[in-house]
Length: 373
Image (cartoon, rainbow, N blue to C red):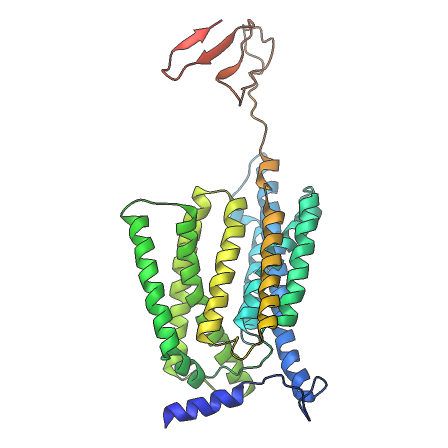
């Protein structure tokens, strides 16, 4: 009886687009479904843009502290706390967005955070705007347009009974078993064998991220359902999803921090975006069955939009940090009793360590012996 009641509730929760009397493209039900999705899209875009502003404000506060004669701790900076507050607001907007729109629509919109950060850094931090940035932003915006228009067009109310039905479904059980096996294998190579390749670390992050987006949508959806219809916060499944959400987020941040310590941000950010978005889309398709009944052309154009947004993120983040690396340079300054004729400039393409004041070139062989010409 409970299973049949859950199936009946699921059938009432879905709203499919099908032209006909009372349910065409101009019907009230069609507009209502799209207004709900539009609310989620706007919350996600605004949340990502606010997070971009917060990151640039925090970076600007660090730059200001670095130029002070006696810099204090960063947590005493008003600008840093303002950035932290905006970060919390952006994350809240993203969290709320999952309660209004499908995972397959909200997750790919993370590209707006990367492109928005590139635009804001030009205004706030006076960074250069490259041709690849403009091309990447154009591709990301085009991909976002396709995503919004061709993502699953159906409304689904997330109640505790709905989440419980999906949670014990055979599709999710098989998916979780496969994820656990892959996670354990990768963790074995990472911990036991000492393999710290970026792909392994970010795959661990992506596997955890799939559980994160599933639990975030469940928690956000049940809160939204409680506000708009009936209280759902008294069901045990709500607190189970809260525990999964917190635990997966904590370990996800742990592995992501390891990746950022070992590799450049310009490499980690685009790869993590692709892995996270792909994992989130798969989770939405398997757990919430968001592509059920979708046409092939719609699915193809949707994934083409994902590809454009991925390519845009790669172009925006490509070699960005390398432009800000200081030139290798050593200045002896004024040394008492020494005549300084020139500055020592290391040669990055050879073994020479630079020109000495007497005009000789000092080199060091691989065996550690010093030679002078």
